[in-house]
Every structure is written in structure tokens, then in C-alpha cells.
Amino acid sequence: MDSKHNSSTKHFLSLLDLHPDALRNLLARAIELKKSRNSGEIYEPLKNCTLGMIFEKASTRTRVSFEAGMTQLGGHAIFLSSRDTQLGRGEPIEDSARVLSRMVDGVIIRTFEQETVELFARYSQVPVINALTDLYHPCQLLADMQTYFEHRGDIAGRKVVWVGDGNNMCHSYVNAARQLDFQLDIACPEGYDPDPGILQGAADRCRIVRDPLEAAESADLVATDVWASMGQEGEQSERTRAFKNYQVDDALMERTGSDALFMHCLPAHRGEEVSASVIDGPRSVVWDEAENRLHAQKALLELLMSHKQA
Image (cartoon, rainbow, N blue to C red):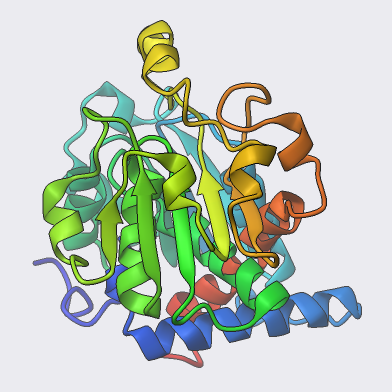
């Protein structure tokens, strides 16, 4: 290894990288940071710190929330597209990690393979954050859980329903069920199940239910995602057929508990995975959820990068 920091550097590659108590503390801190920003307080624990942001996939919320978050914490963020860096021309990930981590104080990576962020972290002297891979989207779950805590209190013991593809968002919901102790029903068509290895780790809290209406019974939270994620556009027609009965609509929400919330990581396709009446309706908290990407990630950046925490 290149540095004595490697063994002690903390990374956030999945929700399982934080102890459940630390995860709850992080969510509480995110709520505090949101309140302090809304009251106009200036708080700059990351002054003179720089965040490198490597993006190999398109982004709106992730890029803006991390970049704005670093600015608000007194630091700076550098956007690095694979089109404009040596990574996109085949430089080994290990070499990029060695070089970048000598120049910046933290790195976020939005890419395809989970192995990419894991390999980068292995050779990095500074914290690495998974800003989305094909396997996980842990930063989104921080925002989702913060939003639930704000609206309904602790999620422990609650029932959550995931409707749709067993994708990276679903995998992160499985990990959240493990970490925060809630029940998760996954309503997905055959052939679109989550990774069995990930599911096995939360077997006591998660189950697959083919009928979305059955899964929604007495739920406290319903979450979904687009039917075809980035890179799956060629499967759109096939996926539309497979998921046609997996729309979160009024009929499904009527089966849930009276206090149930609806979440979506966005962007959303009204009339496909969710009806307009649900996403634009009174149970939807998607705009709070989207805003909370900023606050939850600020809490994460503070935890991993603040010299006071070192």
C-alpha cells in the first residue's frame, strides 16, 4: 500500500460500512444540518478541503447535492467526467486512486461496477464514497431514511414495500432493512429479483412477494424506481411488459397504512412505475427526499472528511 492512511481511512461504499448506531447518528446529524442551513447559519468544517467527483454516469441530484454541499461546508468540489480524464482512456483505477488521493481530501465515484469503487478505495489515502453503482445507491438511502425519520420518526419495526426492479435501489433498501431493523416486502416480477446473496444477508427481514397489492398491505412506506435504469434503455419494451402490473397507483396506496408515505429516487416516469396522482399527491414526499440528498451527504462528508473527526 502507498500510505499508512489506507488501513485507517473510512469509506462509504454501502450502508453496511456504518454501524447501525453510527447510521442513526448520521441521520440525526443530517436533520440538524438541514435546520442550521434553513436558519442561515454558516458552518464550514471543510474549509480548504477539496472533493474529487468522478462521474462515469449522468447525474442531476447527485452532482448538484455533493457540489453544493461541499460549498456550504466551506470546501470545493472538482467534477471529473470520464470523457475528460485519463480514467476514460484506460488508466488503471489503482493508479488514478494513488494520484488523486494525494491531491484531494475525499472522492465520490458514480460508475457501473461496484468493483470499481472498491478497488479505488483500496488504493486511496482519502475517504471514498459510492455515489451510485449498478449494485448499490447508498447515498440515496441516507436521504430516504432521513425523510422518513423527519415525517414519521424512527423506521425500526415498520413495514416498507419496494415495488419494481430488484436493482441497486432495491439492494440498498435490503441493506437499510438490516441496519435500521424494518421489514421489507419486495414486489417484483419473476426474472427481476434482487441479488440472492444480498437478500440472504437480510433473510429474516426481507421477502419477495409477486403480487404488489398483497405486498402493500398495511405498509408504512412505499418506494419505487424507473422500470429501465441507465444502460437498460434497450430493454424498455420488454421491461414495460414485465412491469405493467407493478405501477404504484391509487389502488395500491389504498392497501397501505393510513400514514404511509411514497418515495421515488427520481427521475420519475409518470404513467409507468408511478401514477401522477400518487407522485403529485398528498402522500408523496419525493421533493423532501430529493432535497435531503444535500443534507444527508453533508453529514456524510463531515463524518468522513472533517479533521475534527480524525
